[in-house]
Length: 316
Image 1 (cartoon, rainbow, N blue to C red):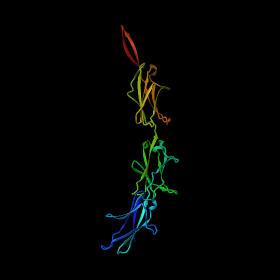
Image 2 (image 1 turned 45 degrees about the vertical axis):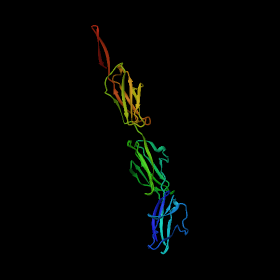
Image 3 (image 1 turned 120 degrees about the vertical axis):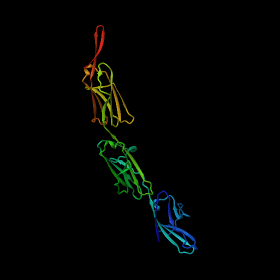
Image 4 (image 1 turned 90 degrees about the horizontal axis):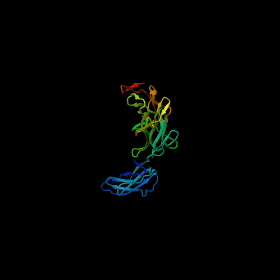
């Protein structure tokens, strides 16, 4: 007895072929009956129709269920020729549902965000696909590149893949990790995605502009910038052990750059002292970086001679 194999996805339609062509031109088709399993009762259900047309004959099952996975038998009777029987083994593919990602000690990341982590941290991500027949393959991908394809099936029937992430580097900020669950070419694969967030210390801090001498008693502005911090760094200004307070600060839209300007009125006694621009991420208070500007102060003297005066600048 002829046996063919057919596949269908749960929720879609299945077509089970049956050859109803008479053995000879003089013969004619009389009756077609379908059975499933070991039962001897023909199939009668509203989800099943028999199609007979130019594309051949087939039993069409709509809204396929997992329970439709059985061995089917097609019986064809002719007016003259002997009855013909054929069998069709229907395998129903149950697509996996969207997998679930767990972070660290079983925490589910909110809104697809994991972290924030610090440089050097290591974490584990567990992706679980609890449904699907056959058991799905569960894989991890980063930027369309496969990074882990070692999944396992649990005693409860779920499929898991654990990814070790780290030690994390600055370049891992914003990394998009996707867990895919797929079990058959006919079924649509499902995925879940998380994005890595990190806390980063500032990379550099520097003064903007040339280190020019300043005039005593006049207001001057010094500008400093820092880049590389996440979240944005805070800049403070110091001279000796005193914090300067006449300060403005702005952060670029991407949060990567902070620019700060201090206004000060140096005096003669400040010559030789240093103004420090100090940058820190408030989540990493131990990671402070700073840049110093050694002050050179010019003092103006007025010299009177024969009823007129001259302006003389002297470096102190």
